[in-house]
Length: 336
Image (cartoon, rainbow, N blue to C red; front, side):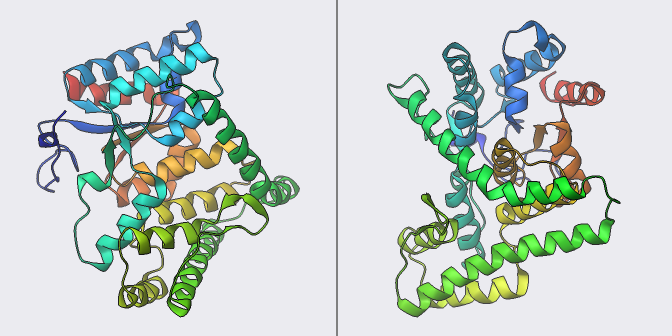
């Protein structure tokens, strides 16, 4: 696949945001790709799988993979994990979404330097090793175990509170906005503190989380990326602080989406499982750049209620039976 397939969408043309020659960037969440395994219980999604494969073979559909895909695939039996990884390698043509922190750093840099985000900053070729590479599957399983433990610990308090209030009166839309503001302000506060501190001491050090020394602190990791890779100048650091105070997360789509989806989970009083954090991360990275985003019913509902699909001009579908006819019809428009 050549870079000639990539281009920027003009609003008067019903084409892809970042692909050209009629190709669409279709993001498949883990719940979608897992339905593509040849199992009797997946029969109802057979037409969908065949449409995606047909469109991919005709170079009309590109489905990028991601690190989160690999992590969530790893607990499957070896044969199934290898099968799904091979399938994603085919559907992605070897392209993977950029790492979450690399993508966030680019979102900040293009804002500070008034540049457009380019295709090479969104997807990368051959970034991820195949699962069949010696030791990769075992390593991924170890990573997932550590992340699951961290995510479960992080969400323990939220889940306990939600369990106590689940049967109470449902909050209204105003409460959702309050929760979004609190969630967004938390991200802003942590990033602002890290940038301000780096300006004060003249350096940045990647730190571990305060209550979990096996996990890196996300804000310090991000600022480290900005300073070491992008050579963030002191005046740019000061500008970033001002932007965070004035615009919040408005210019950082991945953090904005992450904050809002986490707030929606809390608002709905749903129990948050470790896998939900992977789903939120994938949505936060892919939603701004995908033309079509296919996920589970709950995530699709949350995205629509938050109007994130409208904000980023992304068509969002779920794997619910009631939505399958509309989804298959949309894919047929692309493929046929």
